[in-house]
Amino acid sequence: MGSVVRPKKIMVGLVMAVVLLLGVGTLTQSHLERKDAAQYPAPGVLIDVNGTRLHLRCIGEGSPTVVMIAGAGAPSVVSYELQDRIAPHTRVCSYDRAGLGWSEPANREQSVPEVTRDLHDLVDKAGEKGPFILVAESSGGMIALLAALDWQDNVAGLVLVDASEPDLWFEKTADTMGALGRQTALMKFGWHTGIVRVGLEYGQPDWIDEMSAQNRGWFQAIYSRNMPGYGEYDSAFRLTDPKSYDRLESEGLGSLPITVLAHGKVPSGLPPEFEDGWMAAQEKLAAYSNASELIIAQNSGHAIAGEDPDFVAAQALLMIEHLRNQDTTGFTKQQDRTGAY
View (cartoon, rainbow, N blue to C red):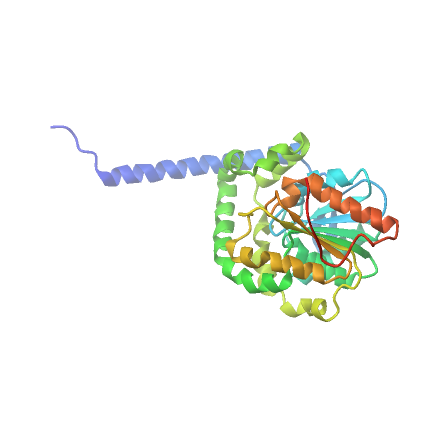
């Protein structure tokens, strides 16, 4: 009579095999992180800001200085292709918020106003001079808008790249927090065990393949290791008082040149809770200034700067040219045109 293999023993064996694989993955991940750190050190400088060293990469020369602000949970490397296209024409800086990219984790959770003050202190300590054009992607728009209100003497223009608008952000973010929390937990598990590193080859956006070899190497090294700030969206939402943005309604942004770039390709990569109200929110962003234009990037989803850095660079360079000539006549309130690229 043949022997019978018991299902319970099979399950125990499978669990032990999975634990063993995860253990090997964790050890391998630790080794490869050290290797990445040696091969891809921070391309910029680390500057102490309120007890946390933040990473700042500035290249190019000239004025005005462009400062790039990435979206929630995104390290600056996602837009190095855009930065590299602007650098031949003027000074351009990108940076990593606390716990992202090459920056150290913050010593406590931060609201959007606190993160905005960190950016101000960072460029000030680095000796970077205004006037500044802020190029902000997605939730980075929340930082850019506060900066435009608080640094009025130094912010000369905004390029808002499918950026968040405060009313919609406060209204809809709560509906997305459950899914974002689960995503953050899965990413942290995947980073620790090396699963994310392996999965990058299959899960990264197609536009990553279009990066230069150097930028792609930096991207893969950064996204292959744990980023403690990946879940910053949660604390930013919980700790930020909606009244922080009341001045936008009462004061507006006057004649500050603003270019609003909105995605035209759906599905765009936005949470579905935001999609229905997104275009109206983009129109509202443009309405904060009487020197603004709204451009639809018909062939791009939410990641416009990654998918078509040439297009976004062209819009930033157009603003630079106008400001150098002290001419904002090309920016007409809510001029709506389609991005041709």
